[in-house]
Image 1: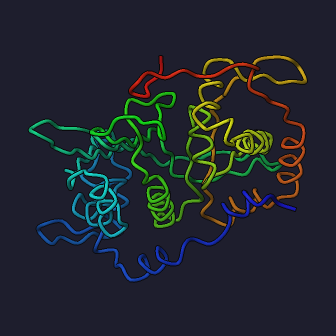
Image 2: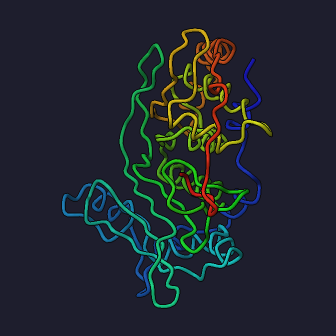
Length: 303
């Protein structure tokens, strides 16, 4: 029997996004301002070229990406939190790693709200057959509100310079449909911190079932007393203890996957995966060290 959290990850995509994609032609995402079209041969050439490409992942035009972000509701969300429509920058000079950046200009100063670096690459699943899967790899993922300060309700978390944007679920949806467009098996991300693992865990699962069972147990620790910020800082500062071994628990970055194809979904449905996940979840005995409490400044930044 699979956990409720895993069922959430494996369920069909939200209807509003399925309907949106259904009614959009490929031309919407590939058209340039000069009304050029893109053939399958063009896509193949862009992806195989060693000199880089003018298109993101060899397919998306700047105009197409800009429209896609608008249609998925990203710009509306940004407007609601006080950010103007951003300028979209696309860097495809590296043929193997493409970068998107959103920049907002406020009082003549440019601020970055989002950065995303992607590449396509094969991975090997940790199943008995060592199955190969072609995936969209997220090498770098940053979302921040550069004009907002931290607050009591959203204090600074490890690795943060600014509060988040609250649009990560939309970005995950966009990544899913990108991977599906290229007939890839899934999206791969590596969370560098516990709180990013918990956030990604709403849409992704660790390829290693032991790690995902552990993550579920850690997520269940969050309550009124153990808030996300306290749990995250406890982990970052060596204040999480494995009560069985009495050793410090250290977060180790590892790949998580958002499954797209049947091949990748089958691994998460596999009885080997679900049994190891359940055993790991039930055997995880991690606690915050007694009397630990992270202190913040008046501006809710870490001291």
